[in-house]
Image 1 (cartoon, rainbow over the protein chains, first blue to last red):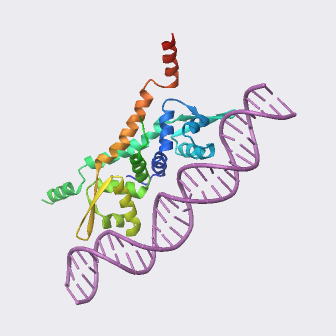
Image 2: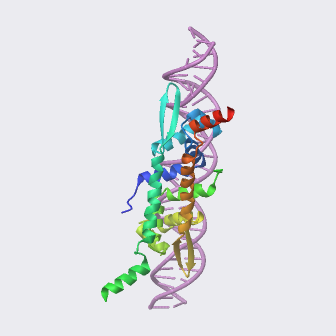
Image 3: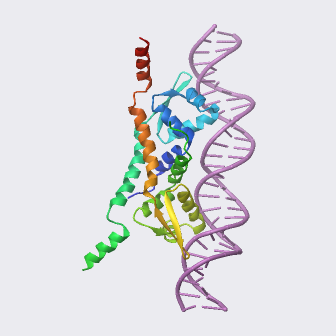
Length: 111
Length: 111
DNA sequence: AGAATACTTTGCCATGTGGCTAAGTATTGT
DNA sequence: ACAATACTTAGCCACATGGCAAAGTATTCT
């Protein structure tokens, strides 16, 4: 359980940048083109594209090119991996496997 | 709304590393010393300390030294900033401010 | 055809990240 | 006192990240 997950690495890393979180927020309202998003981020296109690529690579967004315009859409489900991880942590906290409990349990079993 | 949050940057970045997520997972069972944690991460202490510092800096864990031993404890509440951010995103999705809705609303107002 | 648009590719650069070894410091055990 | 333990500090290194400008490509407009 709780194996190493490259996907979690990528998703958390993607969200660790204000520009990218702001893109996620913007796309929450609906799809937008790379140009529109880059402009609102006041950043050059090449720089901005790196953020788009990173978001796309970990599946947080999807992009498609039509003519010369690339449109980005949010993949809402992908945030689920973060929620799942947090839920997993909660499960650990709530499980009766902490040290004190373990001691008590073991002691009981021995009696 | 949804201003730039250095705390979110730090928390997400802290969680974007398997070693650090594993520390969070381990501390979910209860406090542990730096030495114990470093050993289970099969990493030298200096390297491991960087992870500890990063986790502490963003408030995900708290550490205290007693004698020559430093003990780490998880700050469960800190994961709340991630949950809040995701909740905020959900709120955006569910708000009626997407493009189609905005168009409809604006059009109605104009009539 | 030629110009304008919207990316895309390339290459550069400063800084950050994550690992190590070696040496230093403060506690604790004998 | 001396040795062992548990960090801590300092310094090095390879690679990743995040920004830019300049030049290239594919569409669309006139």
